[in-house]
Image (spheres, rainbow, N blue to C red):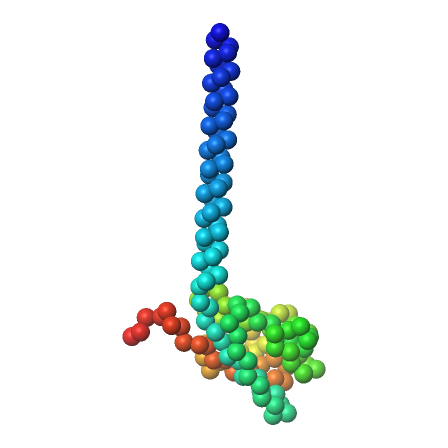
Length: 149
């Protein structure tokens, strides 16, 4: 008789444990979905990049994506016709509320306002960077969520 009661209690405890685990996993899944939706709906700050080559050619690009690759390869977001530029030369990335420039181990380096970029560096409006013989001028869109002073 006691063995039957212990067996029923063990089964009830096991069922309660599985119900709790299912509820916890469902709650975590719903929270992750809500966080993902919230992050995807967050407005990203745009960036305009004016490209100026030595030949006098000028182009302007505007992006809202968080990752921009610059290089000679045609799959880059900004494909540059400059033999001194590496296939994937530099990257602009938006995170932590700022735009960052980093060199992608290019052969000839990336220069920001005349200084070589060795680590990811924050860029702001009117910063100028150079990949090979091509210059780029950055204009960061005004952040509409920033406090007005």
